[in-house]
Image (tube, rainbow, N blue to C red):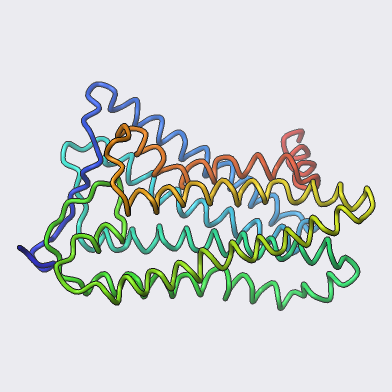
Length: 307
């Protein structure tokens, strides 16, 4: 039995020896990362440089794309590095930092998607009062406080609570650090950690999902009773958002489920792929979804490439 002061590093036990395919996996992961960064950066630049896109919906999109670059960088660059190593370890402090960044990515994504659904709700259900509701000051507060600051503070408290635990081991069955897996290694009382995890999950996972659910019920109600133009506007602007919500919720749900239950009966490669789903597929598919479905963004991208 050892405590955390005697655990300078964690061993990531989900990795396997790829043999001669090591460099192939490295190139694939690095290529996916470069594609994610370039595609998200393209849309960020398009939104920032075109004044016609300086509307709340596109500003919230810009925030979403920035967060996706952050999440992919923290995870994919680390995994690409680990694939080339013979021993898969991570230092204690770096593990806590990775937990902070990855959990922040997830929480910010959910709050960002919830704010975007609220924006669509106001635009479609109260179009005449949209500019009154979504003022520049309100948009700034939503981005700074709701989307970014509150999740960062909450995740910071999570990491501080985890850092106070005494640990009885240092092996995690994962390809990156996970807070709950560290809690499972603890040999001290984890009651406070578990309670806080439930509260934080309720605030930053369940609450955004409820907000999205409520707003889309109202949006669908207005669409069914509205004009053809209203339905077309709702479909064009809401389809990418709904895809993002369902896609990210699926990936996050599997990762939460995997850390809390024994899924050793599933093939190891499948568990690894699904644990990376919300960190790769979400930022990879979001850019074409938004770039192709939102007319203004699509036209701006066409103009850039034509020039």
